[in-house]
Length: 94
Figure 1 (cartoon, one colour):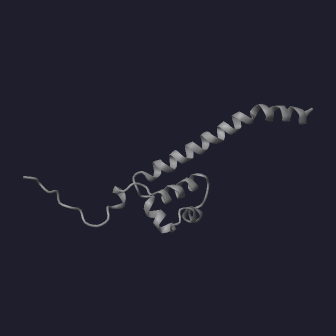
Figure 2 (cartoon, rainbow, N blue to C red):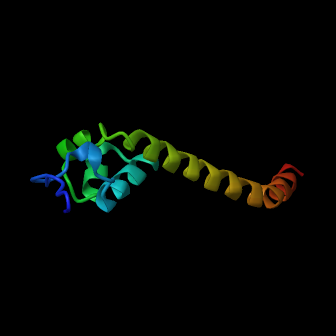
Figure 3 (cartoon, one colour):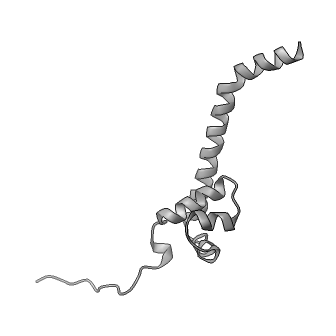
């Protein structure tokens, strides 16, 4: 004899869902400095919907990870350019 699990009806609650791809794109735009209106455009959604997704348990961590990724990329660019920048500054100073 098999036991049947009761079926859940309807859509799962937002907190139980993974962040959708469009919301992830919007959060990445936010981490890059866009305002919430611009983020909604990037994510093809509304600011009201983004406000609701910001309450998701993974939202803040996702945004923070995107910020850290942006900072890491920026630091790499500065580190790569530092020798050329130093040479140019010395040329200009002399």
